[in-house]
Amino acid sequence: MTEVALDTATPHAPSVIRLLLEKLGVAYREVPDHPQLPAAARVQAILLDDEIGALMVLFPQTKLLDLNRLEELTGRKLKAVPVTRLKQMLDKHQLKALPGIPALTSSPCLYEGKLLDAEHLLIQSGEAGLLLEIKRDDYKRMLAKASAGGFGQPVREIRPNLDRPDDDSREITQAVQAFTARRIQKRLEETIEIPPLADTAQKIIKLRVDPNASIDDITGVVETDPALAAQVVSWAASPYYASPGKIRSVEDAIVRVLGFDLVINLALGLALGKTLSLPKDHPQQATPYWQQSIYTAAIIEGLTRAMPRAERPEAGLTYLAGLLHNFGYLLLAHVFPPHFSLICRHLEVNPHLCHTFVEQHLLGISREQIGAWLMKLWDMPEELSTALRFQHDPTYDGEYAAYPNLVCLATRLLRMRGIGSGPQEAIPDELLERLGITREKAEDAVNKVLEAETLLRELASQFNAPH
View 1 (cartoon, rainbow, N blue to C red):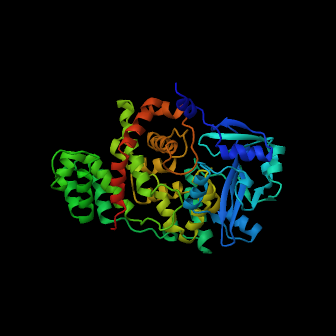
View 2 (spheres, rainbow, N blue to C red):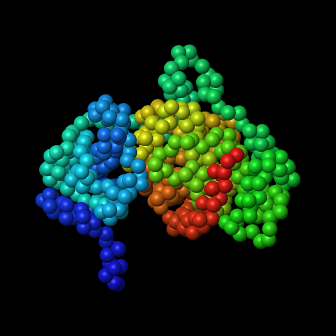
View 3 (cartoon, helix red, strand yellow):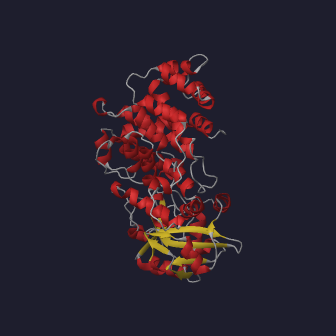
């Protein structure tokens, strides 16, 4: 094995960090990052700024950084430093992540008082997958010029509703009333102004449940919507499907390339997605909405095929679940427009948490609850609302479990490859066993999709075209 190969196999802290800690007289131990390491010892470092300047904020990963509390504490309206500026700073020192070392930047530092409760602290080393363990007293010395404050909300006190769907209606109503300041109890459908389902989508839903529906029927529906027709033809002609010969019509696209099932679910995903426009604001570093949807759907397509034949759910419907898994995000932006920006800013400063904690803390509900509720309101298949509702629960074993289980597996696999947002989460053996998929087959499904990444991005860009 060459020296270079050895070096890549065991990453070390970047030299700038080693020299800085040496200069500060701080001893450390290199520790490979692992999900089992205690969150209370992990230091989350975030660089914020406003017109006054930058501020480094440090807090344990057992807390959610609440920007409202930070504003009360500092009198400043801080938000995450733009990604491009942070990247320039990190690149200058050849770092891949921001270590929680105040001396690294010239900006002042504020830390959560509870941070020093842990005996040993784990900070980012600046190298991917590697942490530095530092004793509490040594770390305390590094914070000598920093100020302590209380601005974090304990994550354990935030209880996202992952498994109580019967409470969704009440919780959504409460959340909406809290934000609309209405005194009168109204039915949910009246409180939330939901756009009506497009005619095309209504027709496609009818065809989905019609056992006698033919290719002629779906061709007829797609052809009456010029934008959808153009999309289906360009989809079939895309290099991703590598179709033989030129695609001349919608029927051609369906018969020769895409097939009835894929077209009906694709058309439905498009029609629903275009009912709500993409929000203008979004968290920095977020994977674009449609790109994440297409990747997830493509991986679910491969995972469904990897399942034992007798246990496979309906392939077209699992694809649709992937396409719409994040639909609640569009809905949050539509229902809570003034507060959506606040959600985005909190997601930027809490990269260690799944969005469900941020949304629960700020709104009292999550995008999964509101997305699943809308699917029911629109009379979409039960499998679909189940997929949206329980996608973050790897233990879900209720009716139609395969659908949320596949979404959960696909999004976690993608997260491990840096696609999507939030922390990387382990994939439990039980989740794979429930689906009858081996870890190797799951990795194969992701590899196949990511090999075609450029082609998939091109497909996703079609969804973003003006409509």
